[in-house]
Amino acid sequence: MATFGVILAAAGQSSRFRDAHYKKPFAPLAGRPVWLHSAEKFLERDDVKQVVVVVAPEDRAAFVEKFAANLAFMGITLAEGGSHRAESVRRGLEKLRPEIDTVAVHDAARPCLAMEWIDRVFAEGAKTGAAILATPVVATLKRVGPDHRITATVDRSGLWEAQTPQVFARALLERAMAAAPPGQPTDEAAVVEAAGHPVAVVPGSPLNIKITSREDLRMAEKCLEALPRPRLSGPAHPFGDDDRWR
Image 1 (spheres, one colour):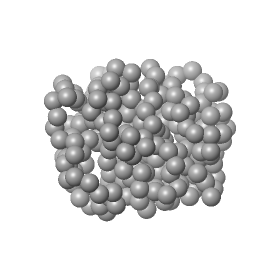
Image 2 (image 1 turned 60 degrees about the vertical axis):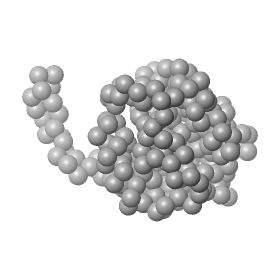
Image 3 (image 1 turned 45 degrees about the vertical axis):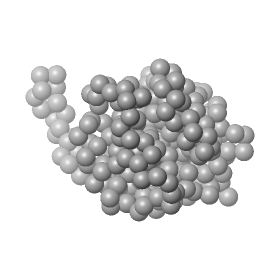
Image 4 (image 1 turned 180 degrees about the vertical axis):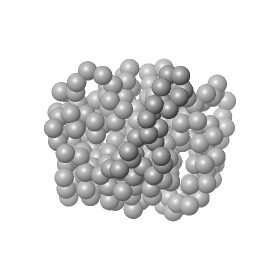
């Protein structure tokens, strides 16, 4: 049976979120910060043995001040991210315990996960060594030039939108990350693909949205209402809109 570790990526700059007080993983959503909704889905699982949250170095002190008790109670490991996503994931990998053989990387800003989706991608990742959640592209795609005029209509046949979690054999991901070509891949599957390993696609759901703008928070609240309640119990609003994160 695979032993899973989860790297929760929360070290981005949230430049498109446009909020003077919060980065998107730390914004309040239905009484809890976005990142905690994401973390809880994995903490509920018996096959997940470790969760690592990767935050930007400039956020570490405030994050620890606000959430130290929760990190300790839930057994969450904290790591400092790098200048881009690949470096942040590498640093998360370094924090995983030796017994972890399979790694799931998940965007902290994707709080709307259902356990059945995790079940499917975990099973496929453990079986094949590399699997991601994704959904087929259903909208018409336009390529647009710098003058904001359409230059082409893109054939959407065979196109899928990648989601997380993305699940890999630990040794494979570590080798791929060590040999990653220059540039800043936007997901781990791209790194594994570049290393020559096939990546399986597991159908996800449009509900598994990634929060990018403040408007997405309202949509996420509706998505959460459609998902099963977490099995963890506790105060209804343990992390309110607190000035300590401002």
